[in-house]
Structures are given as C-alpha cells and as structure tokens.
Image 1 (cartoon, rainbow, N blue to C red):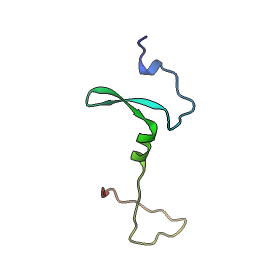
Image 2: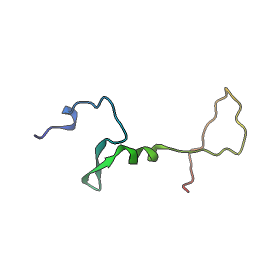
Image 3: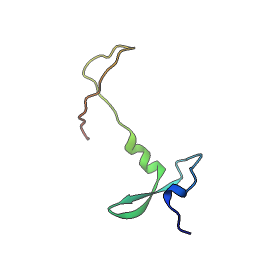
Image 4: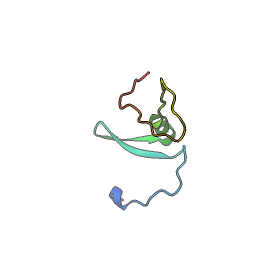
Length: 65
C-alpha cells in the first residue's frame, strides 16, 4: 500500500530501538534512532567564567575533534 508521508500516523512513543527512514544521496535508507541521537549532542568549552542568571552567547563557529 502506497501512502504519502503526510498520511502516516504520528508516532506516540519513540525508543532507541525504533528505525526511521532517511533520504541519503537520493536513496531511501533506514537508520536506528540510537545512531542519530549522538549526532545531536554538542559540548562547549569556555575560556571565561559565566555567572549564574546571566545571558551568554555561544560563538557560531565550532571545532570538530
């Protein structure tokens, strides 16, 4: 049965074991959620002290290790 993505029901609970479809290099591929979550993580190292309850702007550039 062919359906548009917009016609699919919304997932209610998502776990690390779930698999989603992605479009990569013009091909449909699958990816496990636990493989995607680490891509969303970032760390910031500051050279100065940031006081509590103050706004701080994180620089736009980043270094990949």
